[in-house]
Structure formats: C-alpha cells, structure tokens
Image (cartoon, rainbow, N blue to C red):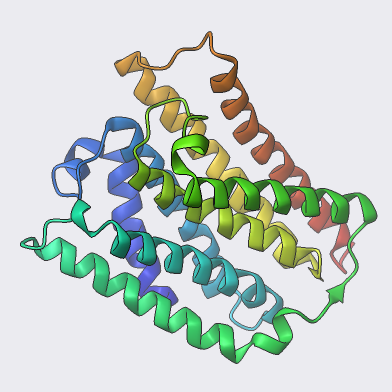
Length: 258
C-alpha cells in the first residue's frame, strides 16, 4: 500500500508542483495557480513520510508515527470530498479514481491503525524537556488551526495569502491535523528515527510551500506583501522549517552511535 501510494505521489505531487499547467488541465477540480503549487507541496511532503516508511520497514517506532498521520490525512480528505461532492464531475474517470484511491487508503490505514493500537499510545524513549514542551505547543497550534479550517473555514481561511473557498480550507485542514497528531505522538514515541522523520517532513513542507508561493507570485503579483497577516503566514511556515532542521539535529545527537 505504501509503495503504490508513493508512486502515485511522485506522479501527482511532481506534476502539480513542477508542471502546474499540465496538472491543472487534468486535475479533478478547478485549481488556481497558488492552490496548484500548494497541493503539490502537500503531496510531495506526504511522499517523504511514506518513503521513510518503506526504507525502515523493521523500525516499529516509525510506523507508529506515520500510520496515524496517514490515517488522519486520508480520512479528512475523503470525508471533505464526500461532503463537497459538487466540486467533482461524476462523468470524469478521474473522479472515480480519486474516491477509489482515498477509500482504499482509509480502509488500509484504518486496519493497520487498529493492528498497532496498543503500541501507538505506549510511551517509548526519552525526549528532552524543551522539545517535549515545544512539540506539545506545536501540536496544540496545528490542531486548533486544523480544526478551525475544517469547522470554521470562512474565519480561519481568511488568514491566508490568497483567497480560499470553503472546499480548499477544509481540504488543507488535513495537513495541519496530521502534523498535530505527529507532533503529539512524538512526545510519547521519542526515539531518534521518528524525530528525524518529523523534522525532515517539516523542512520539506516549509521549503516547498514557501518556494511555491514565491514562484507563483513572481508571475501573478497577487499577494499583498504590506499585510501583516501574509508575513505572519510566511513566517509560520519558515519557523516550521527551522524547527524541522533543529529536530533533525536533535535526533542525530540522540542516536546510539553518538
């Protein structure tokens, strides 16, 4: 399941981010340039987690972090898609593929989440106090913002550099809720590999999102760079990447080889 999903993420995420014009004309619903790159950044970031899962198949602690994040992401996207079914053209084959793939991912990740249910909430490893505190704060912030986008999209979606409709607000909530779950679980599964993995995921998401926004705005000139909200949004993603680098460094210092 992870291998198939990874191959699809390479194709989908790569085309959305690096070949946006090609991807937009073939996407399941209508996309603006900013949303195209942002979706590409999300899918390429998801590829990082699944790739690590494939490369560390014998490392249980990695599965205990990736599986809940994968389940939350796919389940939220699937439910939002069902609730916003009018966004999709039922006559297109891509619509059936979209719902079929997400339904399969939901079922598959639900099975393995149940399979590992006892281990997921079992404490393992020791995390330095300052990292434990920070990850709790990060989980709380991402969780609040994720639920805000999902349940109050008009209010929380206003804090965005480009206009978002309700559908995209709710769709994007999945990445924040998955990040909140990963941050919270890492306070309990504090071993080097999951810590390094979360750091790499944050660095990837931060880099791709910031690069995508800048690339699109150079051509579109749509973002108001005088607005404090827009700078705060960019700053939040920048901080996410900086913290990701620090997490990767902390994971290396916790490694038994050190």
